[in-house]
Image (cartoon, rainbow, N blue to C red):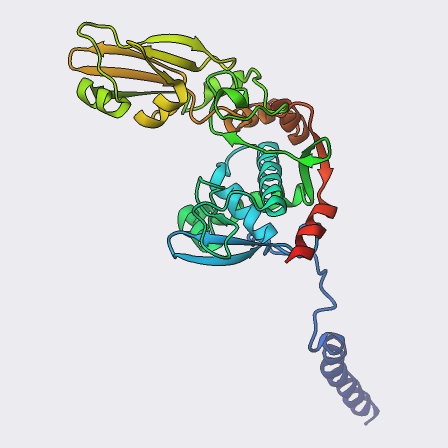
Length: 342
């Protein structure tokens, strides 16, 4: 009989172990997740933008044009939406960081000075258009990016967080951090395109832009349309206008149309050209206009930044190349001032 008693005892012990041990293993984690590394995230997930860094506590009142309403957006969410809208996510990481830095500098300066409220409804600080900085919400990015949303969003979030709390300054003041798509091989002095001269917005070579798909474009207008848009009258023949001078950035400075002088910027605006670096040719009743570059040309070239990054340059290298004499500074005190004002 003893073998049967021993067998019965062993079976009882085995059943107890089977029931009790799993319960002991689960008990410490009941109702919480202390057993998981809090930093762990599935590889395919995109972290929500948190406000646990230097950008925390600041909101941006953005007028959403399509909705005709003002939305208050946390600064970091806003920056992610701006970088995603203003620069292709396929660009190099260091170029995206440079874009994040310019975007933060722009909005910090604007929130501090609150200048130029033209076109803004009450309570708004910026629009979501090119008049300020283009901004796309997370839902909009999901629709635009589709299946690529996860990796693109992750890349943009990383770029913004890598520059958290940093802005560009000149003599301890936030700069006017203008940027554009593609240069004609050179950037422009600010006073050659806008009224004000800024010591950090100087013309520099930007050879990387020649690889941009937007480097060269053309447009054809009828002579009648050309004359109407510019408010001029052309003489018969092949002559169109005499280019009086060019800017430091090799763009058209002024053109003389039989005594009627227009700036390159005015011609670009009225004819809706990609750039103020243009040449033209009269072809019967039409005029063929060829442009180099895309944008106003002042400040940082986005395709130039990407070219520099592809050669191993850091975002610090990029911004200090395109903005002369600037420093990368902490915005902590400025952000605190903005928070205190609200």
